[in-house]
Length: 462
Ligand SMILES: *Cc1c(COP(=O)(O)O)cnc(C)c1O
Image (spheres, rainbow, N blue to C red):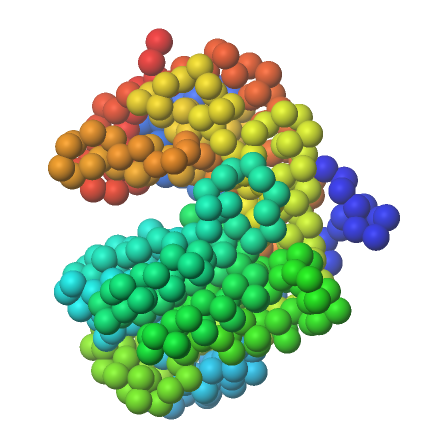
């Protein structure tokens, strides 16, 4: 876990000004917490968790500049100073002249698809994130995933597994172009491990979409991590700044949706940013209907101020260098002790192939779920299954809708955990691996009809 940068051990590029105590409960109390929670990590209480890697969404630590911005928040209903700060930040960092704030990312998707997608339409994406897919469906349209084949291989070291398959995109637009409401690309691609999209691929996808007269949007939650990974991995980009690369990414697009709970490091917030004024006006009507007036969009003025500052900090290179190295160090540590992980390391977390790690468990007893429970049992670590339980049931057959892999995601909140704390995670994984044959599967004792993973309860099999 002491992976180095420039020959020196990896170290946080900030110091701590305010602390929050965390506690590792003794093993019998962890066992009792698991029983009470129905073996569902979502039902654990915050004080029962030692290291919380459930998500990187809304869990980042704000900087002193963000906290100061919060105190200066202007709560004017219309035209607030804090909204103007956000407009300037969106223009400076992303290059879009128009911004419509929303209370979080899925609300931005709601506004976008209500305005642009209709029954019978298609929406193309590299891989739709869950909420994006749900909002495309809610608009009566059909999501089409077009990630490159490398993106479905957990092992190969292809550097841009988030790329969209350009030939399939071109074919879709040629055959059914008039049904395609919008072409999107998710940067980084969350659903296959936080994998980046190359600048070359974004430019080509944009060119294809525009040649067919279609809009091209980015789902930009992790745009800065994507820009940093372009700088690190794409030929000809190494000497360019992340800020320049982020600008070039956005220059491909007619707009973006943003979950500001990710790279912009706020605890709540989102927006749609747009290049064209007419399109902005169309979306604004829906923004006002669903989120509130166009200069606050479901957020307090202070939230807008913290977001404006966080957006500027998102492209700060020492932060990104450390963050991506931290994720990479955990990925390497797990790999070194023989834990099967999705490679290469992505931007925001490490994904374990639980189906392979616990290959004595058939998929219908949920190896990913079992592994997520073991991380808590071993060391009070909370993480999330991204596998069969999450995928739910096929509505027509009623059978489990098996996804390609049973994964466990260790998502790393930004600026929160130290290298020493992540070393605890790596050691927990090593110990779980050593006793993996003793790990049992699970059966449902309570299975909700929709989004079952959040509220389900389980019992371990003997
Ligand atoms: C989190 C996320 C969203 C949804 O954002 P929320 O703020 O959680 O509503 C959309 N797209 C991607 C890629 C995300 O990671």
